Length: 193
Length: 260
Image (cartoon, rainbow over all chains, first blue to last red; front, top):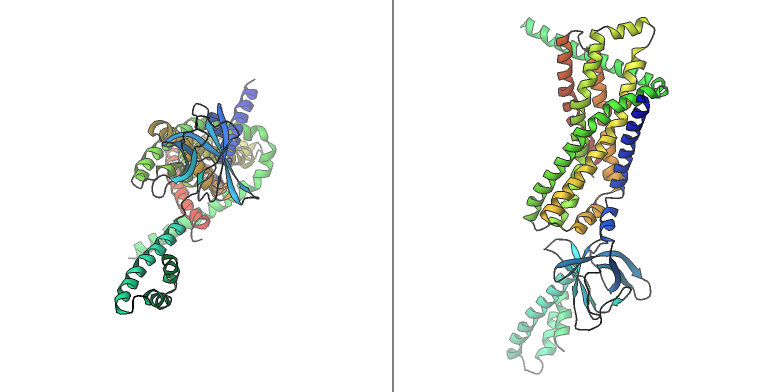
């Protein structure tokens, strides 16, 4: 009897160890899914670029957590990312709601923000959110900033050049002279039309 | 002058002797492990004694370490506005470092001391000599099963410590403070890798299990067979096992995560 009880206790101890390993190995992930899975509906949204969005990131409407990103796939036809959003069925959004990928804080976690539209019909399970806005990729943002900066600096240069030369020839003169600085050449071309 | 040199020589001799004795004890113990593995009942009883009875202190300590990590981590991370990384901070520090190291220190205090005292008293009561008289090898009957049980129990305890600690961090971070639970878990999922973090943590706890159990058994076996000798051996077990664990932890961390 006593020996059986020891067997049981040691068995439970070893099982607890394996359960802990399993919990850590599944990276503690399934637990949260179980607690939220009770009453939800799924909608999808296609994004050109999801940036650093991960599965299980939060979905927020007006800053309030209303659901989770369930999974993220790649659509081979449109070359877009398809995010499946799992929304709590206590919350309803109009059909023309738009989704965008936002970042909480400067370096924080990325999440999906929902901006409700004005449609009287509500999103149902399996619907697709039509209007989406991609994640802001920092490199693109810096690139755009540099281009606009270069465009800003190139236009005063063109203006200052204008009084010296004849007014008709000034733009055509200014562009070749700037083209030596390569990054500045493109925005100058863009700015002129 | 001559006296100082003599005492230095004696000190060296003593330590070299202790090192040799320890190594011989270790080899003798390892050679008895196969025969101990056949006596499963002995090993089971020792796992019960070492593992199950250490469970309470390990789980409670893990829970509170998790609580504290959640609180302190939140306050530090909130200055950078990245509270969402709390899950990763708690999980990585537990699985990589605190789980194995704290468990080994607690294990040395809880199980190591009792192993030393038990074997030391067996020697003091001449039970070990009696076994030898009866042609029962005390290495195979007493020492090796305890060693095997300690090496099995230690990684399990460390895993439980880490798991309970993460749950404690979850409780404080998500339930009390209000960090988003999805971000908490997704950061853990994104940042924790099975082999690099969990695997290395398990290797650590395995090595600590070998070191602490060996030190406890060796100190018990070498204890002077008097009440005072057993008391000293028990103290030495805690001191040298703790220092060994911390030193080994630095070495293993440098090997596993350093440089690359």
